Amino acid sequence: MPVTIILGAQWGDEAKGKIADLLSGDAAVVARFNGGDNAGHTVINSYGEFKLRLLPNGFASPETRCVIGPGVAINLQTLADEIAMLGERGLPIRERLWVSPRCHVVMPYHPLLEAIYEDAKGAAKTGTTRRGMGPVYADKVSYNGIRLADLMDRNVLAEKLRVQLAVKNSILEAFGTPALDLHVVLDEIQDKFNQIREVVREPFGMLQDTLMASKQVVLEGAQAALLDTDWGTYPYSTASTTLAGGITAGLGIAPRWIERVIGVSKAYQTRVGSGPFPTELTGGPGEVMLKRGQEYGTVTGRPRRCGWLDLDLLRFTAQLNGFTELALTKLDVLDSLEELQIGVGYRHPELGEAVVHYWQGDARWLERCEPVYEAKSGWLQSTAEARRFDELPASAQAYIRRVEAFVGTPISMVSVGPERSEILPVPVL
Ligand code: GDP
Ligand code: IMO
Ligand code: MG
Image (cartoon, rainbow, N blue to C red):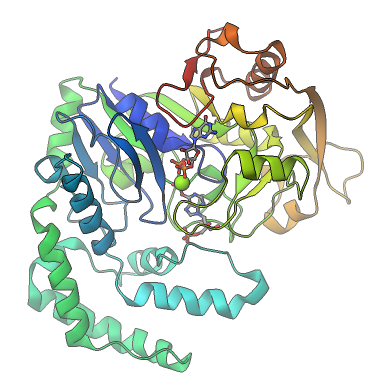
């Protein structure tokens, strides 16, 4: 079965981009199936450093086809900019890029509506990336979306925009945001669409042929399980499904093709934006993680909140997605810490001494939970040079094996630096 899925196992930014880059060398197709340009995936390979928000990996291998499935929301400007950027860096992608005409398009009113909601919520805001994701997916499921296919015919687009602006402008104006002009928006959208028109073609048939020929397909998830619309810390979550099961709706690939489901987790925990985070640290080791890990959002530049690795969450996301393996990243960030803690469950004030789990409650419930920790010794030496598991300090090996045992999923690789080469295979126990 030729499909490998790479998924975020925490709250995002686990280094999915790096793992996808590593695995995409041999792939016939690399595809995105969810999210939009709220994602920011860093890749450092022989061509340099890339921070991609919409395009999947695979761009660095000239024979690989890159696909964006219907589950992805398209910001036309971001797509045009990324295609142009790769071209300028000697990696032309237009002829091997397939963007489904079923993709919904982020319209100029989506980020504006999102800002109105976020501002109205005040302290309870989600802390979104403000790329219009909530409103674009809300329009999709309430039959008010505009898809790439609609952009092919000016009359169709004009009529859809007329209806949407009639509703959206009244909301914008009610909250003090100037209304959008139909003709200005129409021209702007058509202009941007013309820059990417040739890559809009349905990949379904090509994907099915690739699967039937048993060629390798790599799927690059965006966001992460704890941001999933249904299973994440709603409403501190994102707007699309982030789970392995999302590939059928988001791309048109049936579950029976899946061979590997790789959950990517940092060796500690981060989140950007609001919402519960039981093992969060303010200061001390959290500061070390922020600085050494360079934990600043790829899209917004916001500092990421940092904390101890939460194994109750990781076991949950492994069960939810059926991870066949884990990639543990950024181990090197913990190098200077003398003692480490790992979260192994929670206590809730109303449930006494019982150790409880994430899935038992909602975000408000989780806010009140106190983590139960297990202490582990640090290793106080650099791991960045290690290229084999047995070159890692004994306490680092013990940390990795503990994670594996608790989660019940083998760790197949460990990453000790941002470069492609800074990754080591972990022998099966
Ligand atoms: P993604 O959204 O899951 O693809 O992850 P991001 O690209 O948003 O964030 C991961 C960050 O960690 C990037 O800046 C990477 O260059 C960096 N990174 C990846 N792996 C490692 C690692 O093993 N060690 C360190 N120190 N940095 C890493
Ligand atoms: P990658 O793919 C980390 C977070 C936002 C916010 C919440 C909702 O790089 O891992 P949204 O803009 O999606 O409506 O914001 O989700 N978020 C991410 N956090 N990594 C991401 O993507 C994220 N995409 C969205 O910070 O808390
Ligand atoms: Mg990211």
